Length: 445
Image (cartoon, rainbow, N blue to C red; front, side):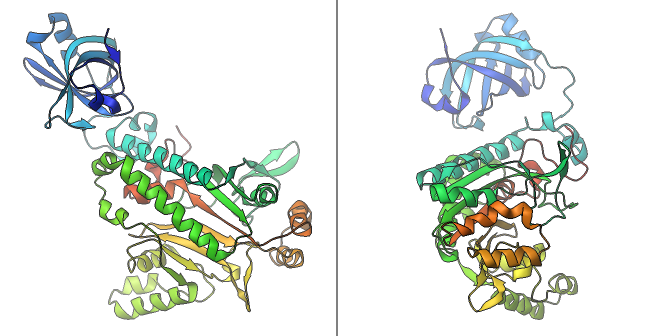
């Protein structure tokens, strides 16, 4: 009896009779030969049905297959450098075929479709080779995130999705009724992570987060996945060292394990191969000087206008894009203005108008992939900040307690999975990096 295998393991079974379980991705009719491209979730394999080598019922069944028909197919694995697929270079000489269902009128054909049509049919679009490749990279990114953190002493602790107060301001919250009291979908698990470090030292949470800002840019989703490591006895410089080691591991893991998917996506991996420590670091002040130089050197009036910025403003996408053009690796920008960032960030020694914060900007114009800071550890300063930001003291009583009982310097950051996958895959928009994206006016399917 033929052994059932996964396509990703086909190279290990050359000369053996095996069985594949999957779906027809495409079919080419060459008369006496039927070339079936079959996918099973782990890869794509060419399966060749030769009329002389199978019974008439098998050959007619193969001829009647339509896109996305489900099937079980048996044959002998052959090595052939011309055979397309992932992994390529192997094909199946078919000896048997069982058709489970012939799909009728599959709506996504091998032709151009509009984005809105594809998004309306996202539940089917994810079967396409490109979307499959993107989401395969995503699964590897997620596993690499967990592997690095688990291997470096971080405890994975879950934090609430429903929270009584904002983490980073009240204007981008989804409010819900919690048994008669207002509650909010979490923007971040960070504040709860700060409690966890006093029990575990190094922790991370990993889950969905929500932002209600009405943004239509290619860098925003209303629901996205974020990993947030938090570290006790850690200052900003140590945090940036952790960040560069972390990001490098993720990228190099994808290069090693998802090379064929990246090739399929047309990604120039030369850029990714350069993502190794150390990463360059520039201050916010230096970033503004660079932007001023770029404005002076360009004749593009539109670009000059886009790059206008005053000290105290946060960097926007055009600023980040132009800055990263000067670097081959991700670059840390540190020391952002205090009032451009969240309330909990430690002030810079001797410069209270500057926070001990850092964003990691991906090269090639992909923007921020890490945002982090050293946290305020002094309870009196934290109370002062809450008052300045107009945040209710009563909602943060437990958070203030953390500074009353054994406070230590501590730091952390958040990394958005979708932005990271967008950069690694070289995509134009985040909507392809999660199975069912949630965007402004997009909550179906």
